[in-house]
Length: 264
Image 1 (cartoon, rainbow, N blue to C red):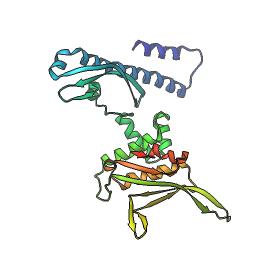
Image 2: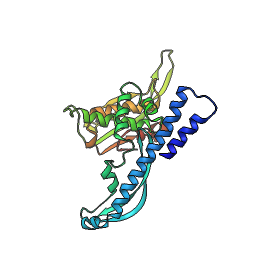
Image 3: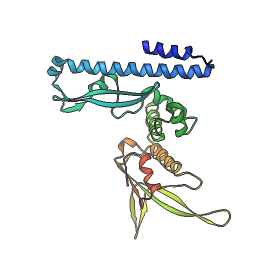
Image 4: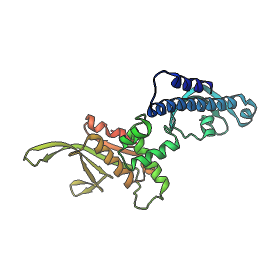
């Protein structure tokens, strides 16, 4: 608390007169940093208490595996960084971070629940990239925004019977020749999403194929459209693998960033 008072005092004690916007920005930086320090201290205090409670841990069969594992999560105050202890639960035969369970942090979660909701609300009006910039200052990727949007939308509405369930999905990534208005031809990336092959006579037919062309789009837009379509069409939890078939060009590898469980 003394540090925040000292920092605030320095701002107002400077000879140069500050305008309202400068004061707001500077004070917000000071208070956000103070809150993050408080949260880090609180989390590490809880972790230390768990470590020191040897009697209860012994009764539950929980032993220390290692200490000072770092975790980061983006909050409404900025990036929170803290250390915690990794335990082994002998009774349940599993490894875990007890601190994460106590404070309600999911495994591999990179943003807090409040930030996730803000991202979803912004994504309804802006692009994923703009939402990431507005809410987190670009601290998280637009892929993370996309995943949050689909995850939270799924929680807010009941799953519809129109979504299809299957274990494997295929994507052919290739280039196609497109005729332009001036008579010239352009080579543009094209992806085809399908559920497998069916033998028809001497040929194989793609099942439920969906084509997406990149004509007039950036490569990221192409894969974003593909990811959105897959999330809206299939039950993601049921999917075990998405196979991307292509020559390994950079634009094809970009799909690995956007699609869950994808393999080239």
